[in-house]
Length: 332
Image (cartoon, rainbow, N blue to C red; front, top):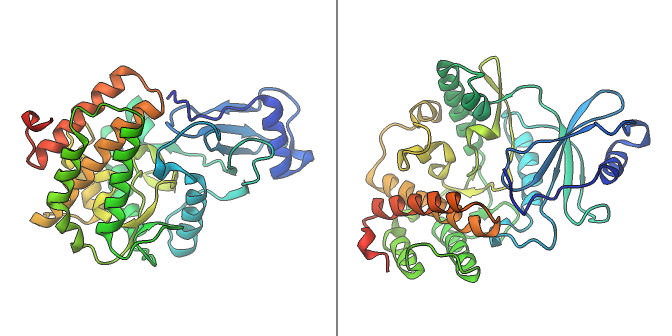
């Protein structure tokens, strides 16, 4: 996927990064050692082959001069903290981090290298037909199980892992949601709705957020494309950069409950252990769908995505607003 946030680097810089992480003896000799992995939306990602034949993955945060959403600032450091937490507190597999560099002297951003997981990306394999529908269903259920295990980790506060921390989930989620709306206003993003109407819609239902009293680790971005599968087992969960402490109902695998363009969540729900939702849970889930829809729409401008992506995101926002009782005639 194309995005101005992708911090691509020339071969010479990639060599220097390998030397920093693994030493001069493992710097490859040829020029064909790096393959860009293009399916992500945010960071630059490369598969590298070291001189000894070992494969690793390099991840580079956006360039310093590229403006990102407020909650996206410093996300790679959040990801590193999340990976360390998951490795320490759960049995859910994450790639081993070999080296992290936050100095900004080789490139103008944070970066790290991790082990290459020899497995299929569940989401991509589902799209390309490398897995049968039955295998995809099993994989999605296994992902639900893994996500449930991640949610068992309890944090010290609500909000981003490294702060700012909040004492309630209503405060933490509302601050992030308002931040995205403010980012959109600052960039002149046309939502198709008056931002004040969107804020009022959130506020009208925000009391249900007080049902969440324990800050659980939530990945938020754990789509099928952020999981690796082998022999029907999830062998790695990747892309933890948006992780925070909050409500497990916000997890991406449940998005299809509200937005039909996303996969049927039934297999995920089985693994996740979610059956019928209470009225309060249903409203919370719809608030998170509204949150996601606003993020998807605002980021089309920040990432300079296509008009088609923008139109699609506006349609999802209309659906989300309708789920919370706002008709299209109330957009202004």
